[in-house]
Image (cartoon, rainbow, N blue to C red):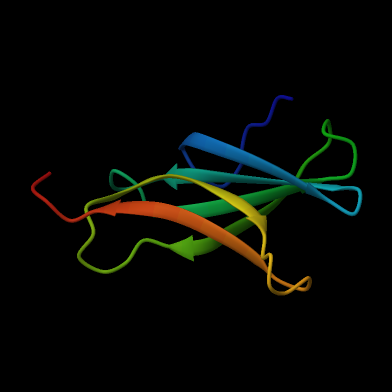
Amino acid sequence: MLYQPQTIRRMWDTWLFRHQGTFFLFYLATDHSPGEGVHLATSEDGVRWQEQGLVLPKSEGAQWLGSGSIWPDPLRADRFLMNISEWYGPA
């Protein structure tokens, strides 16, 4: 899999999830700081990607974000859970 976003300068810490034939690629993105948030791209074949953009912004006061993961909610079939980390200490 190769993916290069078109609307941001840099990306890192990617995690991928496949659901009902669609790949969901989440990644940390930055343009103006050590990280503005989590972005998403989707693909039906893992080759051609559609950039969806920002899906989770960094919280106010956080210095940057850390990588995460996503998985189905074991209690609700219509929902997914994502974890990430945020750094609030000195830069």
